[in-house]
Length: 201
Image 1 (tube, rainbow, N blue to C red):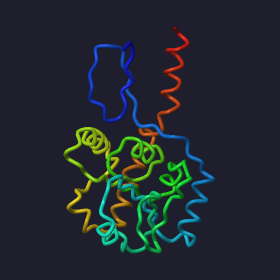
Image 2 (cartoon, rainbow, N blue to C red; image 1 turned 45 degrees about the horizontal axis):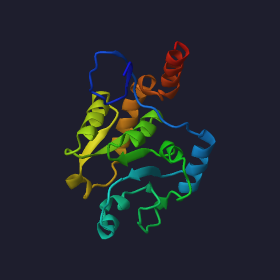
Image 3 (spheres, one colour; image 1 turned 135 degrees about the horizontal axis):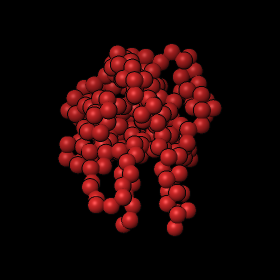
Image 4 (cartoon, rainbow, N blue to C red; image 1 turned 120 degrees about the horizontal axis):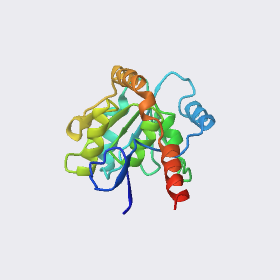
């Protein structure tokens, strides 16, 4: 290895030329984001919550989670999440640009998977992270997010009785406004630096 590009949450050290970056994401289509918000919340009066559980949960337990009864909330879930409620919207299985649904949300609740987190941070969407202490990679990402005030965390034991707190969403949005310029999508910067290296060969 001649170069090392360090992404958000990385704590590896190498004795070579290194560059540090934050998160990056696929490009967001703002017209599509507007369409999704109108589709999911036609009244434009509710909080849109992207719930990316990313884990296998018993269907009966999933249906009984109090979070679905959070007032004035609608939920976006992946196509494989089987929750039959009027305020739960499944992303169509053929839809591939899920970053647009994340960008259309007021809050993303997710485990600390790097890709989904990158899409939320790049779109400046508040994050509530399901804390999985056994996953070291998750902890590295979560520690980075907490260092820059980009998320709140919740343990699974607390999540199974949790309902959405609108004031928490508002507090997170205020925090994001304070450091927006420092955590924009880094894809263009990474691509430019890669091209400089390739052009110099």
